[in-house]
Length: 145
Image 1 (tube, rainbow, N blue to C red):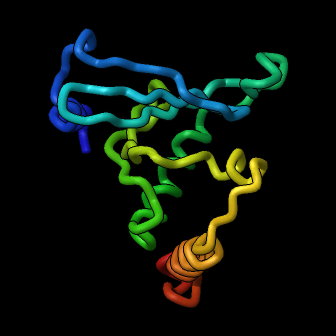
Image 2 (cartoon, rainbow, N blue to C red):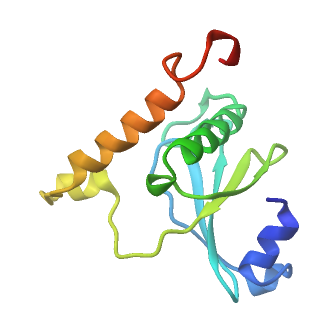
């Protein structure tokens, strides 16, 4: 999906119509929830350093491209457990993906709080099986890899 299509999806190309809030809690990337008149999306942007340490620990921005490409493959192999991808901008080292509406918790935080998920093993097992098999030599010949 091109950036024009993202504008169509959220319902505007006017930045003043978009409410953006940084919601990331990780060590590496910035994560923004961007709300437009019609829909919301997530924008994930790589920083050139480890976020929780600072510029003293540099990282390659190229990792955003590889994460985007990995998510593209995972979407093909297991769309039920992977957010939809809409756009990648190599200049900004950022990609736009589906916003999954609450209620939900970040798994790490939920597990720390003691939440139990009766279907977690089934879901993560399905995701791993479908993505690992889908990208393996068992499904593809060596020349396809």
